[in-house]
Length: 131
Image 1 (cartoon, helix red, strand yellow):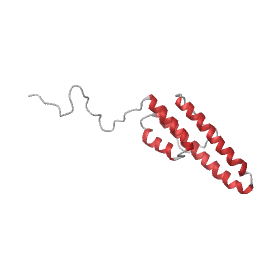
Image 2: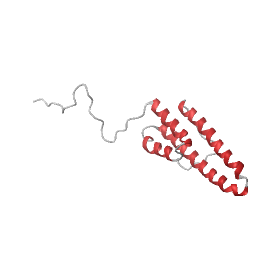
Image 3: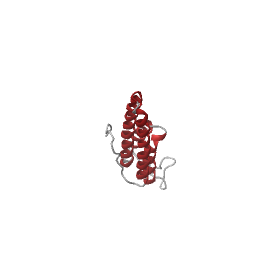
């Protein structure tokens, strides 16, 4: 007595993956998500690298590394921006706040380029809150 496979399965189609199986990302997808986590400095701030880390971090160590780096850097820039904003009352913040924003923009672009080239990048002067 021969068993027939369920409809939709046969010799041409592999069975579905086992529960708990996580399909890894392709290299081009890894680089794209790493790039987006760094460039989120300009649009979504802390939210984008956090979402990328939580959703794709288990599928790629490369994406997890870059999203954690971007998240730590974004948190550091928020703290520096808040301190600079408060220091506007002492007038030094008028100079300090644009420098913080410029520093954040420049290093986010550098990190994005490095991530897209497939290299690991570590931001300077960053508080490591998330590991």
